[in-house]
Every structure is written in C-alpha cells, then in structure tokens.
Length: 132
Image (cartoon, rainbow, N blue to C red; front, side, top):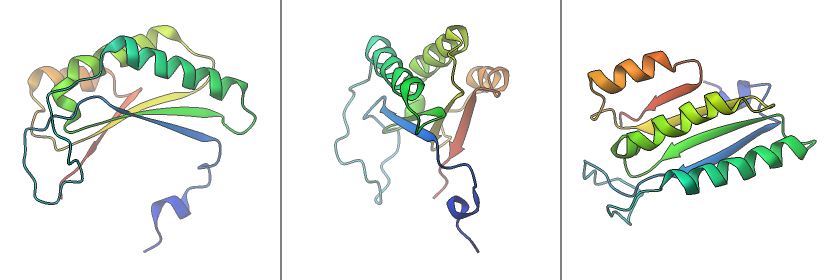
C-alpha cells in the first residue's frame, strides 16, 4: 500500500502549525510519546498571536498557499474550550488564505455537547481519531 503523503499531489504549499494546547491527558498509555504531562494549558491570547504570525508568514510567502492549525497535547479535548474559541475566531477573521483546523484525539472525551459543535463546524475543523 502506498503511503498517503506519496499519493497526495498538493502537499507542497501546505504550512502546518502545531499547537500544544495542553500537556494533560485522561489516559495513561504505556506507548505515549508525551513524557511531560501536567495540567498546563495554552491560553487563547498566545494561540491567536501564534496563528496571526503564521497567517502573515503564509500570506507573504511564495512557498505556502494554505495553513493548517493542528491542536495536539496530551489530550486536546481537555482544552476543548480553546479549540472552540480559536475555530470560531478563525471563522470570523476570514483570512485571505485557506485555513484548516484539526486535532488528534483519543476520542474518550467526545460528548453530546462537543459532538453538536463538531457537526456545526465540520467545514473548518477536522478530527483525527487516534485508536492505537
């Protein structure tokens, strides 16, 4: 089977910004790469400043055409209010470049409230389920 990235024809021009929005996790997987677990969380001001810098970089670049904001952790859904805030802010910001927001989650914190929000924002926010 051919790896996904080799099949994609539009990888060039894609800028990825990964935001570690929490070091906390609700699981204790033995294979986890995150060795620095704590209750620290990124705040909205810092996240927005980073994203504005990334938007400016992509807008002024001949190399990049779009930006992906990828929320990681720990378990990003522990800081789900930040995800909602940032995605809604991006939707209102209406930047001149295409932006995709996404996160990788273990899925255990998905509930009816965030399912409804995820459904409403599925055009801008994508969830990647880690099931290993």
